Length: 198
Image 1 (tube, rainbow, N blue to C red):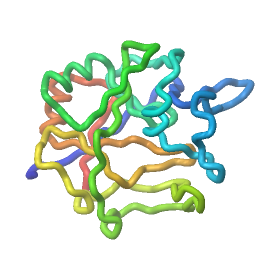
Image 2 (cartoon, rainbow, N blue to C red; image 1 turned 180 degrees about the horizontal axis):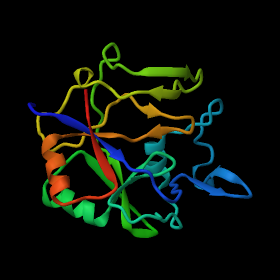
Image 3 (tube, one colour; image 1 turned 90 degrees about the vertical axis):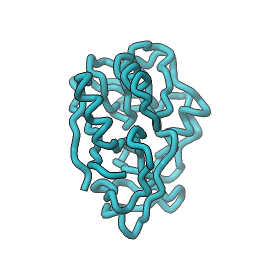
């Protein structure tokens, strides 16, 4: 596919937002009881997409934001109802959208599939692999374009099979063709910037 690709970069949020966890001054950040037993016993990470598919989302989860695109503190991308309408109206694929049962203003955007990625060409750095679940404690950088098998259609939101990780878990970052960037800019979607992928 000719043309440039861009990473969708969420802007910083004013408030903390969580999906799988709660936070408080008394207890700090705590995994919700719904997901108990799903953590790796060694590194304490869990498979985020599997947790959502098998256990769902608590009804008291609400997003404190006004933007169309944001990343939660536990790494999930949320899109507003307005952004979702833009996605549907323009027949943009690649996202499995999951409604929040307690907040009809936002929904999770999970990858429908992950791009096959050549680890020899990925161009990322990986730190401390868990001996139990094989997740990395942290990763640095983004997968290089040459390492991924990109889709033929320019209207597919992409996500590499090589996960971006921080100490808590996966960070969902999405890659799009310049055609999608033009659509999002035309509709003035808020809360994100576009970083050209090398």
